[in-house]
Length: 236
Image 1 (cartoon, rainbow, N blue to C red):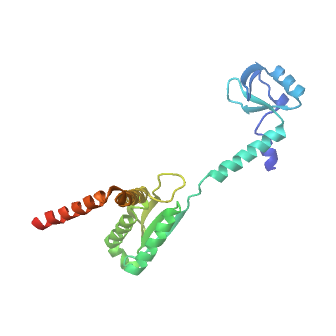
Image 2: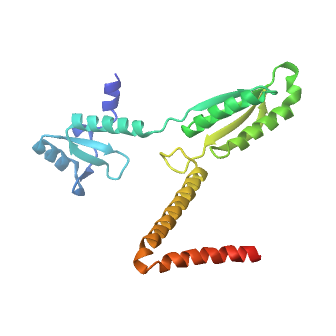
Image 3: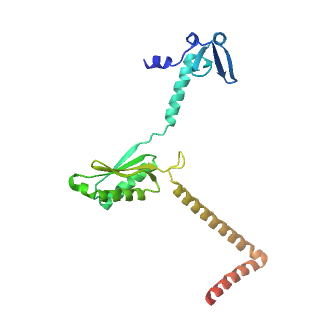
């Protein structure tokens, strides 16, 4: 039944009863009478398939209908595979959650956000603990602040019945990387500093290597510069 429903989505051959159609192929497109397009399809041993009925005139292709359905199914499968499935992970707190439990749940929330999932954190107020709703709000705000590098707040803490919710979305700048922009900037600075240190070490090595060839003048100059620096520091 599913196959029949899919096939009925497109009109083919004699089912196309408009006066003229636009034929598209790799070479471009051209408008012609429907009868002429049907004759071309018969000559080539393919079908006239209407792919855009709402266009003026309707757009058609000359292609084997079974092949066309296979291409459509394959394209739909590829598009589905490319879609990123975002899940919503829940983190539950009590109004008086201890520090150890808080850190444990904070760690899991970081992992969820790094994996591209959303986080719904909430404080559950049981019985008279609803009197501590301000304490629950403070806890959720701290939670959002501690996750600032990994996630952004979609909605501030709000009370719904006996639960106070906070929603966080992953903070990403690209489609594939899991690291935040702050983390990437920090790594870039560290890499730059490392390169500067290497460059300085390389220059110093060249100076030491050239010193014997120049009768020790460069080496003596280097030593004199260091001595002068020490002397200046002593005078200050």
